[in-house]
Image 1 (tube, rainbow, N blue to C red):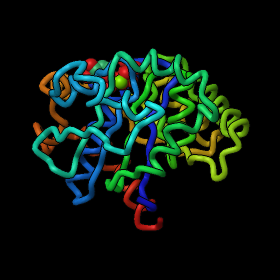
Image 2 (cartoon, rainbow, N blue to C red):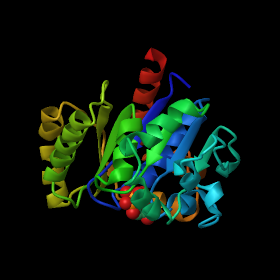
Image 3 (cartoon, protein in one colour):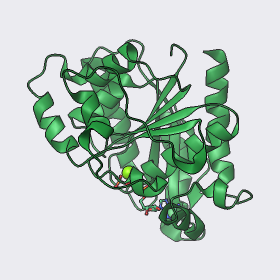
Length: 263
Ligand SMILES: Nc1ncnc2c1ncn2[C@@H]1O[C@H](COP(=O)(O)OP(=O)(O)OP(=O)(O)O)[C@@H](O)[C@H]1O
Ligand SMILES: [Mg+2]
């Protein structure tokens, strides 16, 4: 699909809320009448817990088959939440071996980008959820992306945001990406209002975002209902439509919609 937004969730550290954002943004997007696919490239295959799918299905039913040299374009997609417009491509622990095998392939950083072009998915938003850090799978995610969102855990030093963005910039240059994926913004997560460290962290973030020439979204508070919704394998909005945290997801999806109409 030519005007598809391919949004990757990238972070330096694990557990910062990538999968939480993937599920809740995709759900908000389809609630607005669009279609979305979440592609799980993480070897921890945690997405399936978030959406209530069986763990470690047959490799042919996961993202692993997409990286096979003989992939024929038959994406294995599941439809959780009884929302036909929201589909997922499941991850698998075998992604670790896939990454190793990819090392011997030519143009190995561009495999996913090529597949998404050659065997395009019909959804107008594809969300790529991958492991923290800059391994070969993350580089594949980078080359396939049109946009990047960076969740930040408030417990992590602020410098990691800058370091990640600088790392991304260097990678884009080395990979000769033209155009480069646009960094949509930083999403502070697990914010505890009133906690001194978090308030300090939050006060430093506007300058950091400005320095990085990107947007700073409203912080997502440490919010038990959000964690509960993941345990119950549901997007937050489906369980608690009026929950205030859904506003942050809306704020981000507003921007995605603006990008989509201008594409
Ligand atoms: N704002 C929040 N309030 C409460 N719990 C949260 C919040 N954000 C995320 N969590 C919980 O923290 C855990 C880690 O979040 P998540 O899995 O989304 O992070 P991740 O970046 O995808 O992690 P990984 O790198 O391991 O894939 C999950 O159990 C999730 O439900
Ligand atoms: Mg995750």
